[in-house]
Image 1 (tube, rainbow, N blue to C red):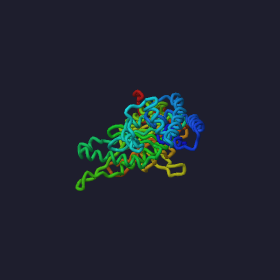
Image 2 (image 1 turned 60 degrees about the vertical axis):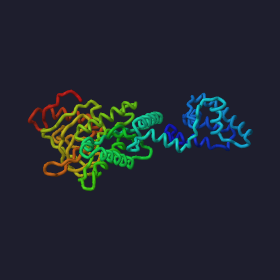
Image 3 (image 1 turned 90 degrees about the vertical axis):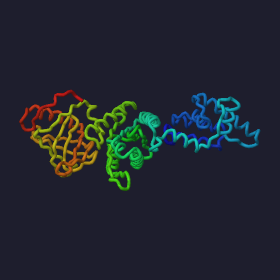
Length: 411
């Protein structure tokens, strides 16, 4: 049966009832009530709305349907043929109990196209802002009903105004259309993608947690970064990047507004951290102050995977729940790593475990690539990380692994 809260599944359920001409009236009514009670979908009122666009309460429509079926039988006797339920409903609401004025017959396929046009963005073909929010609310209610996770991704094209100013709005429109096409290729049929405004896009991922959402977001970020844009046959190509933020129900909020605020905050942080990256776990929501580690003599070794090689890394910042590192090799988003902070802890090294939440490739003056990693710590590492911060910043300037603690307010 699917989930009737999704428009396509609801339309499918109604269509299956309208096609059951093999049942007598009592059996048909019982089947309709059974499917309503099983799915929670207002079958009778939605049938009336589908056929006539007249809106009724479910109880009002359920009282009406036996009369509509009887009217169909009466019309069949008078005409000498079965007019079908659609004509019977139409005649009843136009002539017997008028609820429709100046009716117009429209082929369902034409009506579907008109409705889709009202719901989609003219440039990209994705859902427009209003339709996306309506769909997001339906998906959230579904996630709440079935106790499932739901992820929201917000993306923004970096420095898009520069493209419009340098290459013109026509080229900017091309970037928006092609970005939408890439998004469409990288999401599932059950996912919902929309143009949320200007150069901002939104994606809903039903039944998807943080790891899965981060993987999808990273694929989209990488696909856009690798795309080559050309203004014209004689012009140099240029590249675009996107920044993104992730929010997950129920961890980041129980209502739609909470999820949008959380994803937007993560997106803003991605921009502030240098763009071309995904922030999929907004650390500041835990109110854990980040302590910059620049200039602190602390060596870090990183194991890539549980059986991988040991790599040297540079720690840039640290909080109770996360570490910022620079390392010479690429790590994938979601990849689990082990870290050893040398010179910290009772045995000379503090072992922490975490997973990569974002990475950005950069090149120094020597042209050698390095990767800035954001590592979200495993819950078992939280107490150890908090103790490490106190150890590092309490030793005093000049000591091994020491530095000045950041006394600024939490942000």
